[in-house]
Structure formats: C-alpha cells, structure tokens
Length: 111
Length: 221
Image (cartoon, rainbow over all chains, first blue to last red):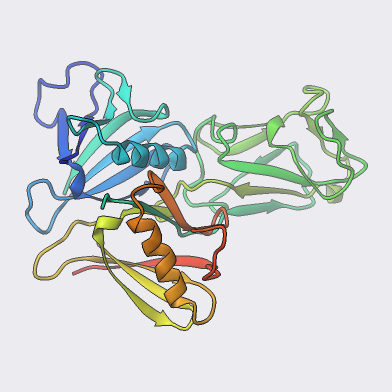
C-alpha cells in the first residue's frame, strides 16, 4: 500500500488558492521528527519532495504547549494506520481535521 | 514489513534550583532549558513540575499531606505566557493546591524539573525504514546509523548516528531487542521508545541489554 500524508499549510480558509497551500507527500519519505525549539512546535523531516538530493522538506506542526511527545505519538499512530485509500491527514487546519487534538497549524519549509 | 517509528530521547531533563528562596514566584532562566518554555498551559500540560522541600514553617493546601521530602506543588502553579515566570498560589488564595513560603528564606528550597521534551535535539523519532546499519561502537555502546534528517542523499549523504549505551558486552542483546520490535508487524504500532533519557524509559521491560542512555551525532556530507 502506498500511504500518503496530507497537510494544509498555514491557512484557515481556502487550502487551494495558492502555491504550497497544501502538500501531499509519500509517507515513505518521512525520515524523522522531533521538538523544534519551542514548547509549541514539532518538526517532521522528509526526503526532499523534488528529489534534488541535497535538500529537505520540513513540516513544522504548531500545537499546545508542552505537547510535543503526545503529538509525535499521535502522528506515528496515524502513519501506522492503513486506510483503504492510503490518504492520511496529519494536519488540515482549513477543514479542522487533525490526527492529534493538540495540533492547530502546519508550516512548510523547503530548503 | 511495515515501517516502525523509533523514539530516542536524547537530553536529560532540564532542572533549575531555587534554594534559600524568598519569593512566592520563581523565574526560570536559560539555565533550565535554552530557550525558556512558553505557553500558559505548559505546566498544566505536564511540561514540568515544581517541587519544594518540606518544612514545617510552610503552609500547604489540603491536597498535600506528606510531612517530609519533596512535595510536588505544580497544581498550585501558573506560568507566564512568554517570560517563564512561575507564580505559586498561596494557601490562602488556593486552600487546596496552594503553598505559602516560610518567612525565613533559608527554609524555602524549590526545584523545577522538565518532564517533557521541547528543545531542538531533546529527542527524535526515526523511521525504521531509514535505519541503514547497526555497528558495535564499544563494549558498552552500539551505534545506529540512519539517513540524515537533513534529507541529503546521493554519492555522499548525511548520516544521523544514535549511540546507545548499555550493559557491557550486551551489544547483540540490544540489537536483537531492537530488531524484534522492527520486525513485529502484529504487536508493534505507533511510536516505540527505544530509550528516553528524560523519562528514563527503555525499549523493553526485561531490558536484557541494560540500556542506560542514548546520544546522537549528525554527520554532514
């Protein structure tokens, strides 16, 4: 099964009216995840979506203070799921759909 | 075989001591963790605990019944949204969870201890898919090599190395404990703690390899 992870980025309204408003990335490209330097952020690191070989795709999740460990547990639980269509929503603030009750937003960094 | 998500808690808990303290507030500094914690829910969400060494000249809320040792008074504490100033409710203001300091400063010894990770590098989850190899690093250490989280790949690629410290000559036991988890599609799901230095958690209850700590180095290509 090909599993994919869906994020809408920094938008509380329309997730499809601008470049990079949303991102679907193959779950196979997920490398690592960890607290991101504040009590309210956790970063997910992926192999670069453009496959340039010397870059990275980072999604930073915003969440309740001190909840990084719970967010990581919830994200891992979601990624371990096997939905029939392989479509796994991690954070979609545009529709209020999150894999964790503590997540409120997602931000994309493309290096 | 499905991917497994392996957690390594790398940093020990941050702590800050406030001995001989004369105020009903404590101001966390970067000596606790750098950066200081933010968010008014940080304490309520279990991010840290505030404890005080019992003294008969303190006044305690009814929730606290111990008359010796360290008393966890976190329930009576609030933290500022951005400055990390912790205010402790007095027992008069909060008869249940409050605490009132002694008028003698030398009788007020408080500690704040981190309970959950938040700083960059406090801990990482790695996808077992990117575990590229495991090697013995020494009699008491085994190195786990992962694709670097920087994502750099190609002729040379970044490498993240997790070094697990365990009992002497227990390398093989540790590797087998790890591969048992990675290979088990029936019982293993979600995030698996391999070692968490902050919470003192280990891979298995048996802990045959006597895991003691973990560290990480990142090598750029």
